[in-house]
Image (cartoon, helix red, strand yellow):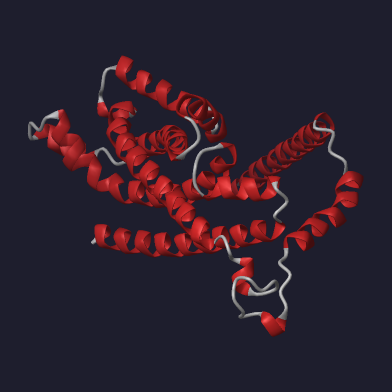
Length: 289
């Protein structure tokens, strides 16, 4: 009898789970197709546009000739002729990397200090907690491009608008990630320190910080990778860096320069992903010892 009771209970649970899964699946499909209807998505348009996409890719490929491949920069069809603007593009690429690093470090540092009072488990006054959360929410709600346009109007074209745009958006995102990390940290060390008479600052420093520091470091490296990609896009609206060179080449129909800039961006992104990944794993390994 008990086994039959358990079996009937199990079957009722399974039936309920199946009904819920079916209802959720139907609801998601309805939202999906209705969203496609509102956005005027059309598979026929996508299918017809695919050949034009590859046409553009073929346009930006450089015209290289094997007999003169390694000739000087005055010979059309050589590598040197293709990369005649490298002396301008490489410093701009370095500027893009510098913008991303500066914005990431500064925003992560500020987010670290803001995350503890913004967390629910640090017993900070609610006005400060929700004030910091509201500021962070506002900063991350505005996309980087919107921030960049505002700062370009204020400071003009250059790296300063790109830095401030990345910093504000990164601060908002990092603060949210950081204070959520603090909230899920174990409170056992904090309770022990409180029993010993430790101050609130000491409880944060010695009870919470050792738990969250590896995660903070991981999020910082991930944000650096994201910020480099975003800093490239910000250059399209005057935010400095290699993005401005890319936009200029597109506007002037210098297709060969579009391709060489894209190759540089892809190489740097891949290299940055590799280096940051290695550093992240190494630091996390050292901090966990």
